[in-house]
Image 1: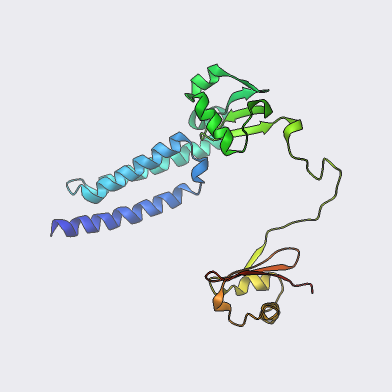
Image 2: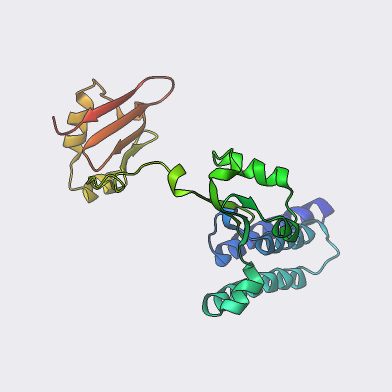
Length: 237
């Protein structure tokens, strides 16, 4: 068998094995990954690449190695849910870097972050003055969490004792020119109702619509494909 064909077959096996194993490991936002999660992912990917191109390696043995590197993190994740000590060892814990506007230099040294890095992460969250910060904590995933001092936070309706209306999630009714029938039926609406709303702005063909979205206030947002303007349609009128 040609070496190229062997590599192609092993690559296909490696690709789908990696796909299955990552699905087994579950979903997690990249921003929420700990350094340990990152290293595990890199290792599994490295084993998969070895399976793909190292034709002298035993396929079954390499797949077994990928399986072990998949199962162990799952086991640790399960144990972490039920044991605080294991969770701290595996995931780590947050470290306070700023308290009441004061930088805690010894903690910066522990997590190996420079003051410039700290200020940079603060600026990405719209904070330019350290004296505005009550607490700054570097989380186990490397992200910086900030709590501003109470007098520096934006005023909210609850601060003014104002009541607000419920705002739920909008529902997509059309995506890329395709009518989402299940979504319309879940709202107890009909196709005729939707076409009537679109007719208000002279839209006759739903294939021209990139996105149509209905919010909980009865306002229909319609964005046409290309550079055409979007429309805001009140379905209550």
